[in-house]
Length: 290
Image 1 (cartoon, rainbow, N blue to C red):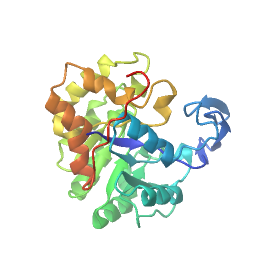
Image 2 (image 1 turned 135 degrees about the horizontal axis):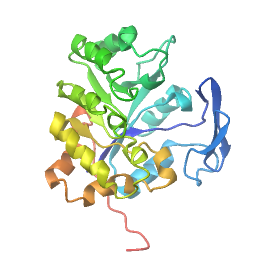
Image 3 (image 1 turned 45 degrees about the vertical axis):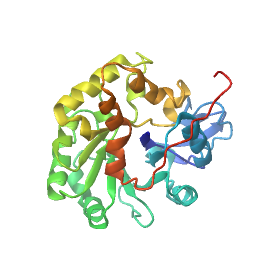
């Protein structure tokens, strides 16, 4: 069984980057701050990155469940994600979006997403109320940090202040950037995990089967333990050049990880951390190449 710890969904893209709107222009492309980028696979012609399309990809690839995180460049998707959770309650965990100087929601959500890399300040202690509220309500925090160790000290303060708060650090600590292991070291705390959403983006120039990504997973495991690491796809952005299945297939096929390490990384660690209590295996689906 497989669980995906880092997925994005939106019904309509309404985000901002550097104060400039981000919006779909069709055929999977978006206006990204004035530049046209392939934001989604081209078959998403209407610009909608829906739960139904995700579930179809999950069913085909054999992924049982997914954690729906958020990103400011997509716009706040709180209302839409509540609809998605209602439609697929046993397969999706959802995050509300925390935005600076705005109220944030918790009711009906499993976690809260902090796009800390886009905050106006490096100091995460200034955002103490969201950490406090998440711990109080038993939510998890999904957080993407600035490169390297720019925010690790202030996040460490929050981890120590709220020791029962579950925190998942995304993008595998921005693994291709200098000082990335400083983020990985935070997973030595009992309730902190690292998820690999975006790792195929960060090793994109190497491309499939991403041997350096596998090496990085082994290196991180030596720092914090394999039981602290979780797979994430960063769907749909990473699907502009690879299939959904390819985003984890390189893990299944590598000989550098044991079968028990693969099981922990692809499923078990996320199952326990995100409380996927009613998850079921996917039925295998044959296709025309079989």
